[in-house]
View 1: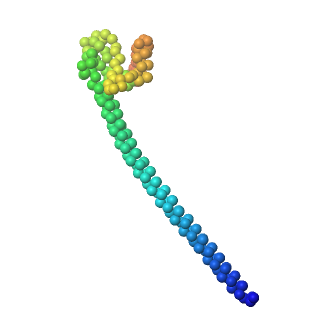
View 2: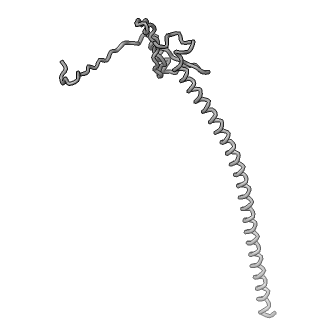
View 3: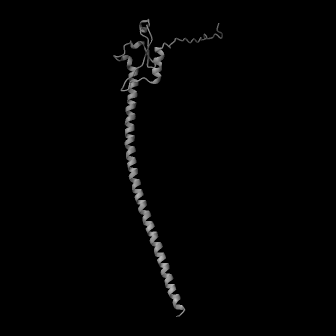
Length: 169
């Protein structure tokens, strides 16, 4: 057997082996690349679908929240308007000129008889309107203090100096 012949066959086998390896590597690369892009495409499609759902949800939620805020704001403004107009409503049983608006934590202090110069009592009035006419915890506490007689009169005097006079005698 000639010595050169087996070397040629080995060289052909080597070329064939290298070619097979190259083909396997290229095929593996193509399979991996195709799978990568397919997975990426599916993920992006699912992400876009999820994103569209979330945007629709939040758009609806913002619309609902905006309507709710407007409704609540109107209720609050209506309540504040009713509070200040209460002395002129038929349910108000006192002379409107004898009522003094406070606003918070109570709405009015009424002095029945004040307009005739002879006040008979002091009345604390809280005005509630709307669906939920419930006193706040502070209003309940104030009502309880009044009912328990925990009310007093206090006078604060601050003497002013007459113009041009430096000393007080």
